[in-house]
Length: 110
Image (cartoon, rainbow, N blue to C red):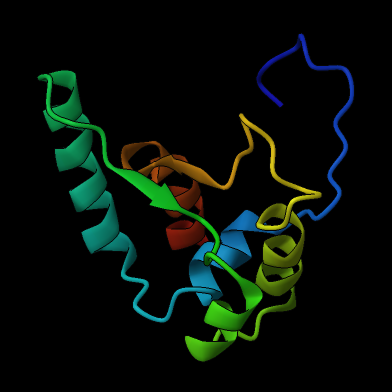
């Protein structure tokens, strides 16, 4: 919404990221998460190694073993963690410190 160069966007296995953050991870603690993200962002700005997190489990089987039942997570994992959905620059991971905007919005909605 803030990058006006983007004219259209398509998602094959879209996910409601706010709901995923709020409901998909049972240990969700928005205040502690934001504090940790702030510390990590500062550390990275000072040259520390970047902390990359995976948004999806390695496979649907591993998701089910971890008691993940959210249909968005399972379908996204089924697509993006298979040969048909994997791309060199695929967005199944991200920098931990860059998730603060999603966490702030989610914390405000809680």
